[in-house]
Length: 329
Image 1 (cartoon, rainbow, N blue to C red):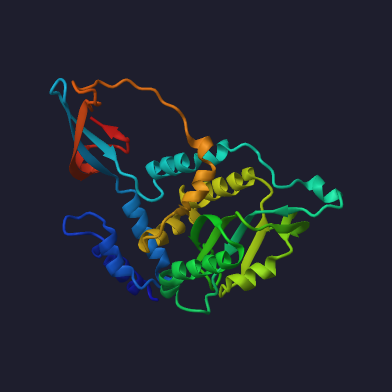
Image 2: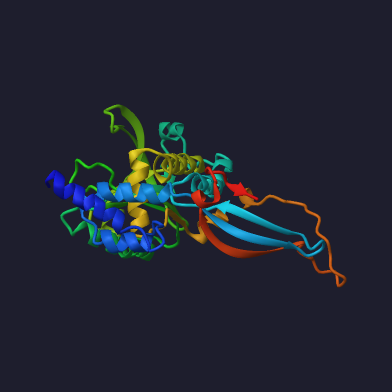
């Protein structure tokens, strides 16, 4: 692409991501970028970063039901990958850090003659770029995942799932931008035989990895179209380590991985993560904290909310003189 054509296309991007009020909006961006081509990913990253850093505030009006006082607040909106988003995600996944270190197995178990088994697996579903276009891959990936997990449940019974989806970040590979899944699978009715193995990591260093002998059985039952990787997780704390590392490196922040992850997920309106209700309930005792608070009661004994809040719309941070702060009065 010539320099003139590239500049013309870049100018067209800015013309086509702003609404008639001059605000960057996803619906407008989707009209321009879809169907997404790999060559357009760099421009998408610029457009997304402009939207992400365009601070906006939700305006609410409060009225005190006791004193009649009125209060107006502007609260910084959560946008995929920004500081508010990061804080909320840390809070939502924070219960994993509190989990006591319940072990399914330990390394010393392999020194005995007993069989070591686990119900907790870390599974990665890759995506073969030769299968279809980048756009079709993102349109089809959730249906393909659902088929995979349904096939597993047909054989292994109840499975609790913590799921993340991510675009392949390296622009050097044919799969650049294609989706892949990271899954924590907690099997309620099945166990798998574990064995330790030293493997070279992405930096060429050998590290200890736990695998399961039934990997190819899982692969065959899932009937997924591309390569899958399966590791055994030895403890609930291992779940926390994988998930927190993922969130810190990919779901938010300023790294190139975080940027492409947020941008493509934003364009295709995909959830950052999904957790089955039963998975969350298994951690319930660690999530619940008791809070005591005093509230004024109405004459019939029912609680009276002192403040009633009403939504008053969204404004840009620039129009309000906000400098990225979270709350304005």
